[in-house]
Length: 117
Length: 110
Image (cartoon, rainbow over the protein chains, first blue to last red):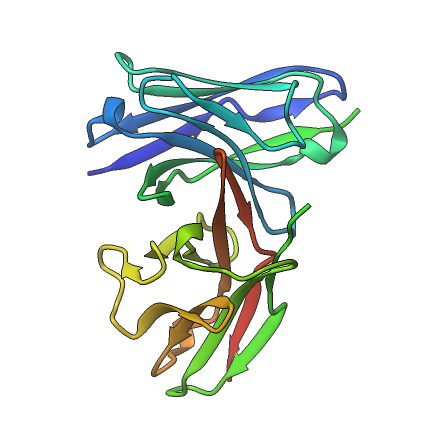
């Protein structure tokens, strides 16, 4: 079964850091571009970051540029999101999503990040 | 900054047909934006319905269809069912590795 499972969410104070992980299974992870998408409570979806299959290209939404870093370990089938300088407005469910034909075709179940003092 | 626009809400009768749209605050949506559509119910992860304008994702029934209508991308649901009541999101590829989601449409079936 093709599956993505996120982990690493939790409660963090403003200005703090957190690293999310996404474990892939059931497909050849190393051949797919991957993304992080988030959803603040009661709000819509927001694309956060993209990494190409070989990590040669990485892109970020303006709202997280300079604070978040996307990375991956193809040997371990893991996708990461290192989040630094967290703000209240970063509170959201974070989804990892596989990319196919410039669309998000497989989604994880999400992990909740809460930024609060 | 370009904004992707969607109707905030829409209503359809059971068995009816509804078309949701996805536009740009400036300019027209074309296939080069690779429009895709997602369905989400509360507490659940999004489900992919349509990608590359009009290609149905695996397992999506053919009563869901995508197209370009005028200057917008469109998602049409024919023969609406009660469990189609969900939030629907479109996303457009802006180029240079940037994707932008619309604000979503809350569809009510009643």
